[in-house]
Amino acid sequence: EEERIAMLQMKEEEERRKREEEERIAREQFEENQEAERRAAEKEAARIAAQKALEEETCLARAKEEAATRVQVDTHKRNQELADREYEAARAAEVEAQSSVQNSKSERLDSDRA
Image (tube, rainbow, N blue to C red; front, side):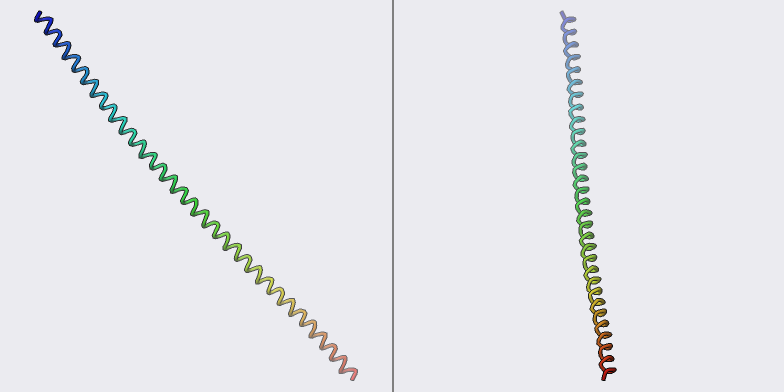
């Protein structure tokens, strides 16, 4: 009878140790899973931050490019306006010169006739 009791106690002790070991392993796995989830969340947060930074950089670059294009268009427009004014001034000077030549010829003819 004592042998049987000792056997049962040994069996119970072995089962208790086995349960404790399984619980320890389960706790470790749980902690490892939590750590893995934390690292995954950190990586996702870093990815989101990098994506946001890239979008901001892209937006800034686009705004700079649009501003540069506007400056280029405005500069071209001003240059075209200056060129048009210069052309009109040259044309007016040419017309005035032709008129002056014509007037001189007319005056000479008039003085020759007189």
